[in-house]
Image 1 (cartoon, rainbow, N blue to C red):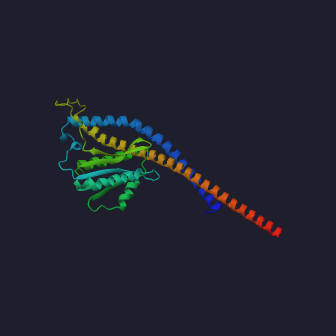
Image 2 (cartoon, one colour):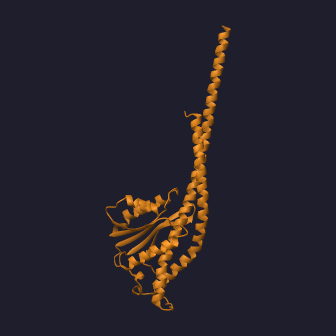
Image 3 (cartoon, rainbow, N blue to C red):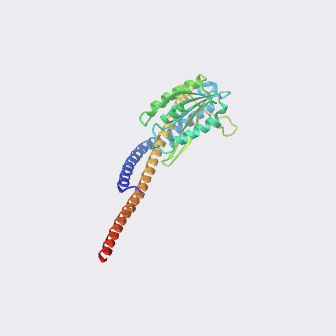
Length: 298
């Protein structure tokens, strides 16, 4: 049985851990509120831009712009894999990694080459340690230290590289892999096809009415389609950042609650141990007194 000093020391240690977890939960809650506000404001803009781009793709010949190219055989896949830089966020990263591992083992066999761009340190470090012999995997770049202040600049840089590779035929399909934010308790792993740009489905047999373009069709397509890639990347990165804050806040709340349970159990053990020591000392006193009484009577 541990001594009272050991139990008291362990209680003090767990209380210190609980204070740290509670502080981290409050910090994540503040960050989550800020990121969630940005995300809620950005979602309508992103959805509208996506609808405009797909409506344009429906009305334009794929030969009009390189980003509308339809590769005959999609053999070169490019994945933008978004994780966090730090841990202590529950299963946020592990679920993503398991999902992408399953995808590479099952669904990626049709591709001859797979390229990666890592947004976040955890995904990059995982694949730096792991080699996949059955697939040709190349790492294009990795980006760390992304937050609510610089995600737009980073997404612009990534979008430029992706568009250039797709136009030059270095990739046939670009897919975003990230956590879609539903709530602080729920994040959904999402595979979103970014390129080629898929047009809106036709409703009915009639040909859709074309737009009037100012100054001309080519300039409008160049601006809208290029901007579309950047906007969808910004949305995905912001979804991932918000999901990370939500997952970390939930994980720290669970850790705080678990620490409180441990403190209660240790406190109960401390009281039982102290009571056992007191009872033993009382028994020693009673036994000694009884021995003295019997000795005196003799």
